[in-house]
Amino acid sequence: MIKIRDIVGHEEQQDQLQNDIEFDNVSHAYLFSGPVYLGKMSLALQFAYKLLAIDAEGEAKKDIKTAVEKRTHPDLYVLDMLWMEGTMEDWNTISKYSNVPQSHRAKKPCAKTDSISIDDVRALHARLVETGTGRFRVCIIRNVERMKDAAANAFLKILEEPPEGLVFILTTQAKESLLPTIISRARVMSFGRVGAKDLKVFLDGVSEDDQRFILHIARGAPGEVVTLRDDPDTLREHKTVHGSARIFWQEQSLARKLSMLKPLHTRGAEADQLLLHLGITLREQGADECVAHAPAYQKFVDGLHTNAHRQMLTQRFAMETR
Image (cartoon, rainbow, N blue to C red; front, side, top):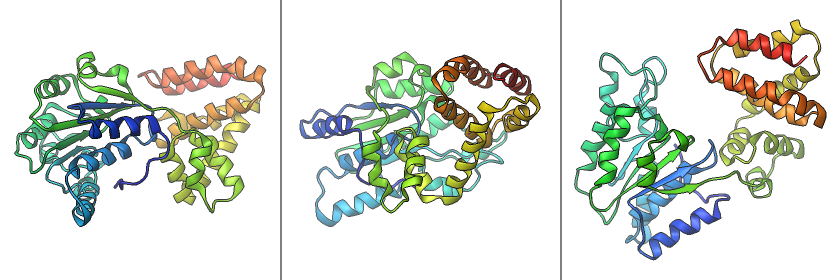
């Protein structure tokens, strides 16, 4: 569950949203665009809280803040974590992130991915036509690029004629994959990476060595910094993978290089982590080596994002980087 807290970085976006409230210029739809873990969802919830608490004071504001964090406010609709058969079936966990009905996803045939279907949009629409209790209602959809074509077209109809007082806040990591008509109907706010100086506020009490490593691999993403700070096991795992990835670029034995790359034969968190550290450690190499191997690495990454045979791609990559 994401709590409402002070946002680090993104001052321009924060000022714009605050000005929209103060000058009564709130748009019916916002699109927060940028890479993962930058704080888009945190700012979305903070903005939702400010809109829902616009006429509240004292204890009432505290109650609204708690209700927004717990996804229990009657004028807040959040489509975030989705039920998936065999992957995410814990309704209690899901309810901490999403409060839009999802029972349809557990009916045969059960949903097996986190793609947002037209049935998800219909369930959301059923909530949106309800009467609000305050001046604003807010609907947050995380990673809106998950919408399938039919769902995106159905959602577009809602976006074109939204109920009065309803504000959509959409987040995306892949704006280029969205329907142009959805983009054109939202106020787009782009999010970039946060500087290390600002991120250090999260690392009070962390050793200097760990600070340097966390800031190095977080690449300006506040969410990643907080995760690594709060989870020693994950931090330790990243250090191990980082060390192996660094060795990979110096290794000349094809057999050993292939062995190091075995986690990339299948999709998953382990493969994603290794691929990340191969990219980071490549930039740590000398300029000549980085230039020499960058094309092969980029071709490898692009190939893994397709349905190509991952083991064959891995073998080719190992040979090209000897």
